[in-house]
Image 1 (cartoon, rainbow, N blue to C red):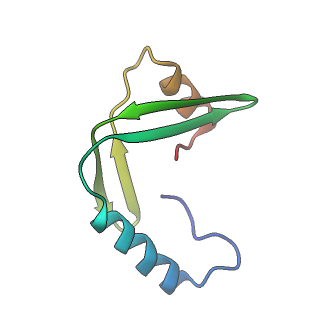
Image 2 (cartoon, rainbow, N blue to C red):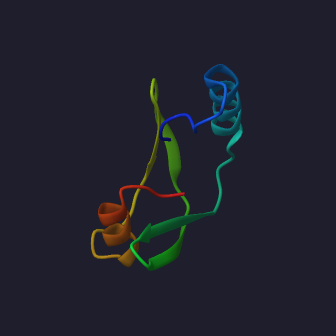
Image 3 (spheres, one colour):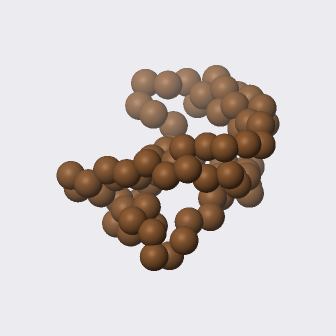
Length: 78
């Protein structure tokens, strides 16, 4: 989930982040990825929190997918 954004109170940011992750329902999601000037959205139906300290969210992306390359090159997803 990344570091606490600059200017945010770490405790309140962590509480908000935890509330969002625990309330996340199962269903269909859109995963955004970006590397350089390339952007992509991908639908996915599986996402789960895999660690609490630090907060880590896991998704599954096919290795041959454009999204996989963009996440690998860009280092983040949303």
